[in-house]
Image (cartoon, helix red, strand yellow):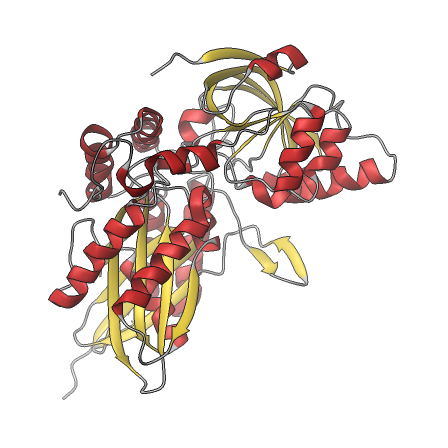
Length: 198
Length: 285
């Protein structure tokens, strides 16, 4: 397995263009959380020419609604949520400077097209690996819409958050290419299930 | 003379609370072992193995730190089998279940993910209640409680359809396979799939949910269904979706089917998907 490359957020164009679908990365720096309602509200800001809750140029949005923070911890459990639900709003945000997204799940052709046009990247964190990811969060700060609870926008400082490049700025999509490689049992053998052998 | 055993509903509350506090932070040993087996023996994709490794490390961290293993701590589903000889005293049974859920989600720092009304009032209830409660009256004088926090990655990708009477095992296999394929990465594979076949639509859906809770490796006692489970599992894993949907050999850890007598005119089939965070716990009072 190739080593993961280190990335610092916010992202520079050059770094984005060097990434390829399927590559492992460790993300450090600042990312902003947003899920369903926050995306809807941010898209309204863009449409109505109102300022966004944070300067979005070069930033990464992490699609997550963390669980409440227990005493003695920086952040609650914080794995990715299905990002395709944000697809109707994502191109608008990419058009105003969003450079990266962390999430899970397939994205629409419109989002991928907009990512190519705007030189942006979509990272996957492992769905359900919520404590592992929470351990990479070193600071959490509320930014906007606290009334949304777990759906509010938070600014996170992260250190070496493990992720995979799902869709790169050239439109290569690991969700298309990865399963195609293993369909019918994989490159060199017969199928069978995990339980079948138990 | 009818013998009854009194059970105070405060015991039910305490039990429900304990079950969710446990289930929210740990999975069963059967699923854990299946994930280890998948990582070490089955998965061909290096990226898939690294995903499985992250999932396993996450389980260790969650269990040891008493932290919710996934931030989606789910809707609280409770199956209650109440013995016919039990007299529930001390308050309302449904309220007791909800109060156990509420306390668990507060004390465990679990996320509250329930809204007041799905269409017209999407304010969070703030307590993760009401729970989804399925109660059956059964012989005996015990109360068996089975609790499962159901995350919505898998729930969102679940499906139900009604087959015609002349459709059979092949169509069931294809429906399950197509549902898992459509779910792709969204249901957080490797998954556990429950299939309910027969009865009416709601009966099939409840059977499917129960079937997601069977231990990995358990086979249907009816050999015909056992064989269909294994054939369907093989077809699903041949899709190549793999851990986290990044491509690989292990898409599904196991498939369980439950069936019931059906109507002459149709066969409801429900497919309920549970993510690799297969959380459930049970106790008998």
